[in-house]
Image (cartoon, rainbow, N blue to C red; front, side):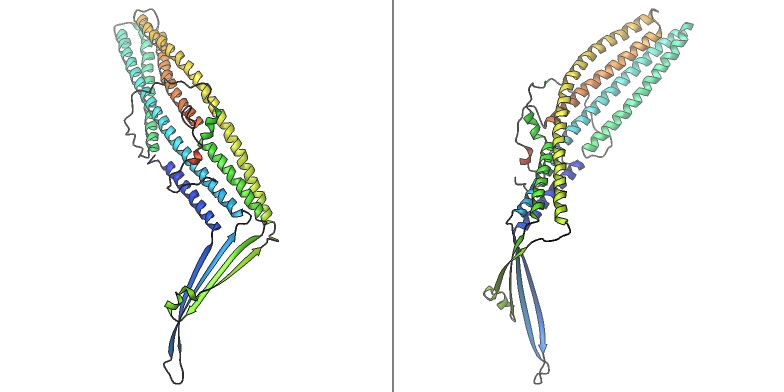
Length: 412
């Protein structure tokens, strides 16, 4: 969470949206401009060749305040607030995604390490078998020449598989280090076993759990922002009322100028009504309305995809559990068949093809058994992401969550 650069990008985007919210909201308040100047003059006369010197100081204060009679500025502020809340939810989604992907890459790396160890064990077994087969051939059994060739090919195939597994293990380790914000040196110490998944998914998960998904919260907030911008665009056709106030004073003495009693004020109200702008306002309304329809469709799609993901990962829980049970039995039978085939080969009851086939099936079953353990873990993580968190933990919508900045986002 501290070192990942993608999360830093999401944090900066939240801060940008929050700063924009404050900037937009500032338009609802009066603006005061102060100007000051000083001048120096010399006036010559017939009696005074060098002239008299005069200092002149002037101070001007201007105040402009647009009255939000129609709530137009408020709509724009509400849109900016919703944008900031959407970005806060996006940051939360980035946090969850980073946590999930880090765990997934960790499990992938452990799986890759287990497959390397299996490949090393398999290669060692094949090399031991080759010693036995070559010994039989050297003792004068001519029918073992083909067996030697096939067994050597089996050994080299296992050696190739081992290097392939090592390459995947190296890649998985470096990918994990990048997620951790480290240099990809493949220097992590990896666990030797995948954890057992003993918990089951409780039945009857409420659909309300999806309301806490950060991506759905973000999509809803973007929709809310677009609706506020539609209101703002329509109100652009209404008159604008602005109050202006100005005051000024001039003096030859700076101390007199700073005496507020000498200032004078003028207050005036200005009303402007858009008459003709070449269709710009109408185009702005159409643009805002089109964006709103776009965000409505995106929000609907986000909800539909969320249900799809939950249903898919829930169904996969059962499929993967049955697959694991079947593979466990397959491993037991294939390992026993491998041992039996080798024993019968040594007694001359079966040929080498039967031995090699039994070894292949045993290796594939053990590899698949490791794969399915990781697949179940990966699916459970995906289910957590699809639900926006753990099972049954109904929480308030993530819009209340404060993002990485110390500047809070107020609810609309």
